[in-house]
Amino acid sequence: MLRLFYSPGAVSLVPHIALEETGAPFDAVRVTIAEGAHWRPDYLAVNPRGLVPALEVDGRVVAETPSILTMIGRLHPQSGLFPTDDPFAEARLLELMSFFASSVHPGFARLFRAARSSWGASLPAAMVADDRAILERFFGDIDALLAQGPWLLGEPYSVADGYPYVFLRWARRQAFETRRFRNWTEHARRMAERPAVRRAIAREGLDVSEF
Image (cartoon, rainbow, N blue to C red; front, side, top):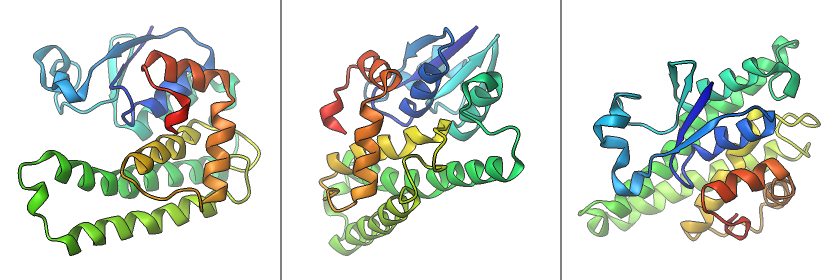
């Protein structure tokens, strides 16, 4: 049995969407970061690092989004979400997930952390501007990645396609102008049309208008 631990609107929405796409049954356990639920003993027993998401597979836990997405794809090869029969396509997918997890996500994390901390308002304007400029460059990279569309790998839809979708919501919540990234916004429109995406969004209490 699969059990996904998620926080509404967090990066955990990416594997949440992927699980819905497989059509396999799973339990979704809400761990709301804004309420500090990720630091409670019951969740630390699942993931001692206190990070969301986590995926429990028959009693064993997998953490970190790229690893979780890889597990979902390999557990459900019939879904076609993970290219196990093509080593180059698999390497490309791993490359994309690494970029999203190690570059784009930390860029947003710096902005989120500054906004939540007591010293956020006193940060030098130049530092904030630099962080936003770095993200803007990444946004251009995301838009270019989707130029061959309709999905990140071109024609096949994959476990990673939830990443740009989640990042677009975050960018808009941080008051970035995203309309000029046509490939990215068109990708989000296509994502919103997928029933699996709508099911995941509804369970998390979100709305497609936020993306």
